[in-house]
Image (cartoon, rainbow, N blue to C red):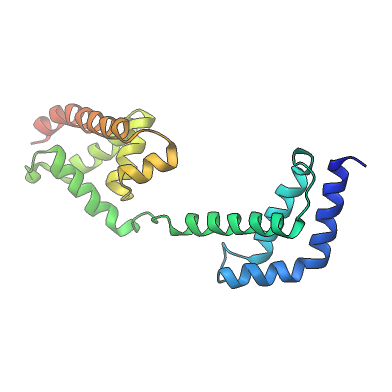
Length: 181
C-alpha cells in the first residue's frame, strides 16, 4: 500500500476516534468566540492535512502530527486576533486633522472644510502604494515594523513611500490652499 492512502487511512481513523479529544484540547487553549470556534480550527487543520497527505512521508506518530498542526493553527488564530484593530471611525477626523497639521506645516487655520475635502480626495488620488502607507500609518495606527512583517516590504521602503506620499500631498494641496485662502 502506498504512503498516500496509508496516511489518509491513519488520519481518518485518528480524527474519527479522537475528535472530541481534539475539540477539548482546542477549547482548553482558547476561549470560543466568533472567530475562534474549536470545530472550525479542527476542520481547517483536517482539510489541510488530508489535502496534503500525499506530500508527507509515512506518518508514524499520527497523534503528535495532528496535535502539532492544531497547535500551530491555534497560534495563527491568536496572532491574527491580536493584531491592532483599526481606529474607530470617530477618530478618523482626528487623524485627518493630525495629517493636515503635518502637511500645512502647523498652519492649521488653512484647514477648512473645503481643504479637508481636498485632502481626502488627494489621498484617494495617490498611487496605491502611497495611499496604502498613509492609511495604514496615519489612520489605522500601524507602525512600520508591523506593516513590514505583514507585507514583507522593508521598513526603509515603507518610510520612503510615506515620505514621498506626504510630499505629493503637500505639492498637490499647496495651490488649492492658496486659492481657497
